[in-house]
Image (cartoon, helix red, strand yellow):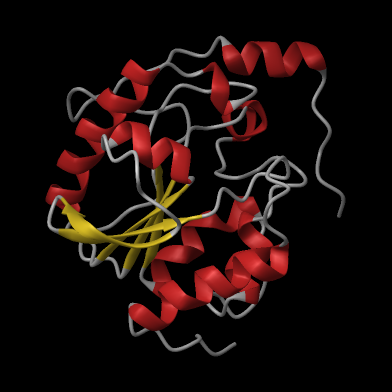
Length: 200
């Protein structure tokens, strides 16, 4: 089934949804986290796009390569749809974002939002205790964690007690990486995390 097409008006409404900053346990992000304690890998997007905000599903924009790459790399036994995101928990995987505010493009976010998002993310990781935090976007990681020299791959530092791997941004706008080369990098993380490909 083809993904639903949203009208410009619906996407504008998604941009105007209340943008919680996750300062207290009662707050909720535009797109709820898919998390549990003790995950193998907690994937972290930059922030929700407008289609994700409209649907409540992570990486929901058609053309985003997160879900196909997750499957190609062996993290999931089949390609999941964004609406099936909660199935990730059964594989020891989860999803959150650096910044909760939905935008059409990540470059609409300020450095202060990234830095605050990094502080909140570190607290979240410390509470949930995943083994690996995988940030999908090297520029977002560099700003959020004040690490200007960070490159894609495993990092020396830990965040909230978790080891860190920076992944390429799976947005269709990231022309530097193909689905195949992204899948190779995701697979390196899967192997480092000691995850065997799940069976069907």
